[in-house]
Length: 164
Image (cartoon, rainbow, N blue to C red):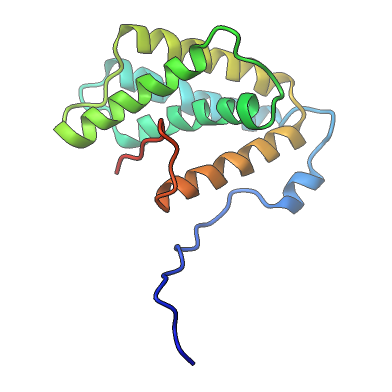
């Protein structure tokens, strides 16, 4: 049998499956422990990006994941709207910080307007996490993860950034 010249992208583990989504509550939010854990990691990552001597790429990733989740809720799932335009400001701010780190080796830092945009977006995400049904959040997580895997496989949108 002849092998094709195309390489298959690596299989990446998925956090949630369709089955997990279907079993999740269609009316109740995610369990409080999950929400607390996620929000704590998200705000610790932001604090590190703002004040740590050497913020890690993991700090950037955790904050970016939360912003990406809100982007999925707004753009893809249309569960909510971003009338202020702060979502794209936050995406841009994280992209600039990530690219600056990747290209120039500088610490991952947000500028003043970037900090304000990211803080506002994370606050909105936190509010939604408290009220949206678990099933909606599982779907959001699955769609966001699918997009992140596409980025890692080289299928990006103009504002997508990956840092290693």
